[in-house]
Structure formats: C-alpha cells, structure tokens
Image (cartoon, rainbow, N blue to C red; front, side):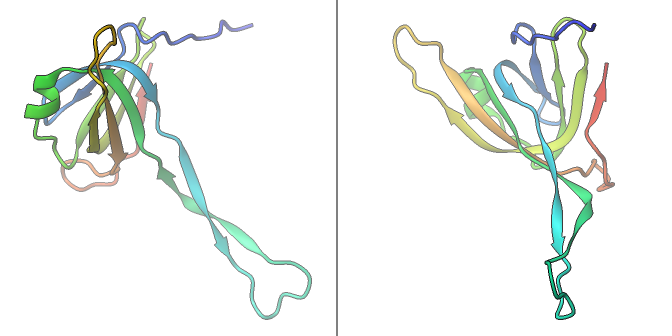
Length: 139
C-alpha cells in the first residue's frame, strides 16, 4: 500500500523564469485539462445525437495564493509567456509549464492577518520559440 502524499505548502515555490521572481506559495490549484466534445449529429441521425471526443487537451489556468511581497507584486513586469516552475516540498518533484500571469490580486492587509496575493496563470503551451510544449512533471 502506498503512502498518501500530503502537501502542506511548506517549501512549495513558484518561479517565473523570464520575470525572474519566486513566490512562496500558500495555496495552489494545479492546472487541470479537458478535451472538446465535437457534435457529429446530422440529418441522417434517426435515434440519437452523436459526438466525438477531440484529441487536443485544453489546459486550465493555474491558480496560486502566495505570501504578499509588495516589491514582487507591484514592481514586476510579468512576461506574457515564460517558463513557470512549481517546486513541491520534500523532493516530491516539480511541474514546469509555459504560461503567462493574467491576474494579480493582492488580498486584504489588516492587523493580525497574513497578507497574500492571488495569481492566475494561463498556460500557453508555447515555448520561447513558439513550439508546442506540454506541461512537464519531474519527480
């Protein structure tokens, strides 16, 4: 029986390669993926609608809540496309994706609260030479 992997966030980081900044992650929703359902129904169908599942995967955004660092949040010109690497704690591996930060939303700053920033990172799946590149996980 394999041991359940528990991610407690300690030591998990997000590094944006071109931009050159690293964020300490508080919470992360890794990107999911989906494929289109292509409608194939025609006038010849008599009993049911017909569909085919597409071959291409559409990768969903990566959502991150990180510790607020005002310098990184306000003084960084995020690249439209760059290698983003999520490094998991305890040598559990890393996920590398080509993506761009599309939203930066600082959280509330109040006494007694830990200040955070939310980042939405959309996967482009194109490397620096505009070559189709899938996300890659290394253990």
